[in-house]
Length: 273
Image (cartoon, rainbow, N blue to C red; front, side):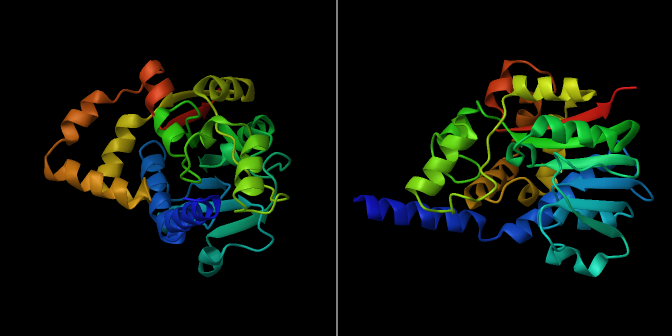
């Protein structure tokens, strides 16, 4: 196989992975709203959807009765939010530089920190956007997970998850030609140690929520993965009754299993008072 064939095959794989992004984003938003509702009553609560993307979480939160502020870099609101103007306020802003003018009860920060050039400033701004004791539901891919090393969550490529932003740009833009080199967003994954340090400096305490996530994902696996292979795996798990075995294998501690094996960190953070 020549280099041209390899590039074409990897591009086709990348396009297939994200061809259903809008549908997956809505299901993922519903999963996030369900999880946040375990710790925070959503009706009447003020929630910040930081890095809202296509607006899946914002829509799910608004449908649950929350008042939502959706923030992202798009000049105009995502099309999915257009019909919900009364419940959702959209703000075009950089999380690293934006300051919120009203306190929020909770924040959804899913699949965002790895995209932000300055996650330290973003987390400080998010903390100041929360009331004392406010909650942040955070999801971000694990840099050292072997699963991500084998298949990067953004591009489906081996090894890419281990590199910094500059190297990712060189691979994805310079070699593969998937994006323009001046594209603002090339993700850089975080290790748990780096994430812990960022949260502590921003004024958050935190814990894993793996058991809650697993229970929610078993009811709605499409909210956790967009890969057909992963969805077939979940179907097989349920068909064979293996849910309890997997649930017992999970834990919410900060040991080596979560530091090194979990593909994504799912965390509930709280503003320290």
